[in-house]
Image 1 (cartoon, rainbow, N blue to C red):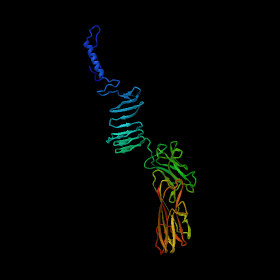
Image 2 (image 1 turned 135 degrees about the vertical axis):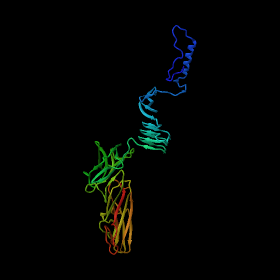
Image 3 (image 1 turned 120 degrees about the horizontal axis):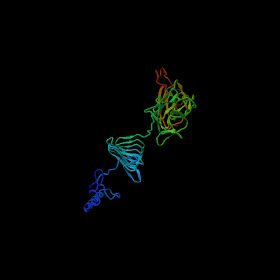
Image 4 (image 1 turned 180 degrees about the vertical axis):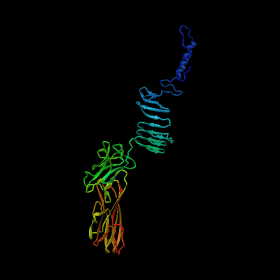
Length: 427
């Protein structure tokens, strides 16, 4: 007779009784039935093909229902309703879920092309650890990566892609000057990545005074964890950018993350005002500006055959990151006292005897004039202070370069703002 629904086999004939005749028909019936049962069994040598479903025991993560003689903790088992788990060395590594999704719980590498084509969320593929794709990747379904995702081949995403690293690289901060102290504050978030770990920035920010700094010195500003407390420090040691995370770190010390830079005044203080724009934020840079203007009229130096500075009071000091462009605008307003005046006026950077850009102005009569020059400075040295100024050359006829609001009498009723240097840049 066939096996029952539980797979239990029973002989078709009743057991033989001692002292009674054993009929050949009964023996043959048993052997025939046994032969049929054996034929319906799965041969261990693989010579037979299953004609029905394979029913395995549920198993467990440490003893999978489908396993191998040489690795009994490796295989598949029943996790829950309509969910199959794959166990490796007794650890759950992969699940096929009831809603049709697949969850990779360990690092996975695809060395050939792979496609995810089910575009109906939540039908998706989820990687809860590192995922490396070395071939072409086509994603039409939702792709969720909780670890690091590396794509070295062509990748096309037409579905939802969520890359949420196990340690997201947080840079939600900005450095600024407040009340004489440097303060690292939250900006568009609450955390900063320090040595590979996201650390929460206190709501009140982190403050750094100028105590102990040297005068007229450029410092990099780093943040680190000091026994669980977020702390800022100033240092003349430069930084390097971590090739994996992209986070700038103090050279030789990954526990310090760069958040900005500052230059101290001659009075050993932090400064960030017009003319002394000496504080930079590395993350979430904003547009900065600085304007300096002559407060009083200045006469050009007559018969100056070499380039000289008009007056040092116009100097506009600043620091900038080396990858930023500093836009410098010079507005000059002046009065020629007589015809024949020649004035060469221009912008100088870190120098009083040369121009980076200039113009030559000639007047054949006494008059009031305006001149505007603009120059974009790039590649400036990062770890030092700079200044922009107005330099000039002139002939023997003096020219008045104006500062402040001045009444010009018969020439003009009044004039506009005084000569100035305006800087704009990101920092």
